[in-house]
Length: 330
Image 1 (cartoon, rainbow, N blue to C red):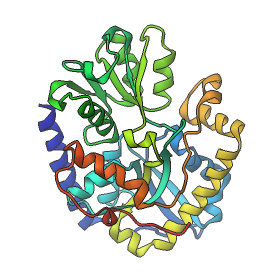
Image 2: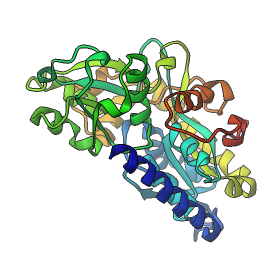
Image 3: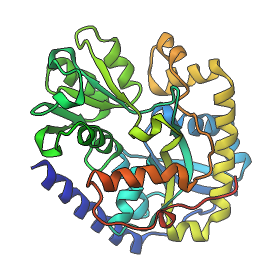
Image 4: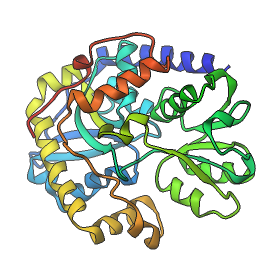
């Protein structure tokens, strides 16, 4: 049934997005203050604290941009918002716009939001509860996996590990649970493994009743060896063709904010507490969730996501990776 749900999501999302592309309105409209408005599909989390820091400090306005947040709950919803014209650009795990591209949605990744890589820059965590009795992915047969949505980085992360351990995707039970509800679900025994992000990961690990163990870190197994693009900003091909300068301005303002966040541990902790809702003590110990080697999108950093999507069978339709990226000179 999970496979049918996955395929159903693919068909519905692709159809809605393709129809939406045809109806999308022109982006980058001028605001009353003479600024160009960019509607950003986003859900609030610690990875994108530079976005909120840049808005608060006025860095986007300095660049001539008025940022309007379009709230969404998942990466798939972010793609749908962009493709339908409800948003101009969107944020999600990098696997999501690739998955959409394979299903006919003409979107391109144009900016890195964060990367994963050694030694400790990992945004995705695969945590098992103590009551599950699981100590390796090979023991997941018949167990319940919890992800935030099908067709996402969470699904990709667990599928790749299971495949490497010789466990088929159909040999585990799947449940979809929003990130904020994952700690409670593990505690109640409604799932054995959660594919989660911060601050849920910290909440899970600090909960003595869950007694969790982390089986894996990083969306991809490849991210343990070299930086891979974990999350990104994307837009439709048409929007980028018409608003390349606006995309550059947005990226440079974001980079300005990100550099401040990355250079100041106290500021970063303040923002993690404010935006992510983590306790101060946890926020201060958290590795920088905004880290990236390069904010420009490179094929080398993105290709491992494509390769994993194909290898795990999540993505059936192949395409040239260059078709889904736009490398801009930030």
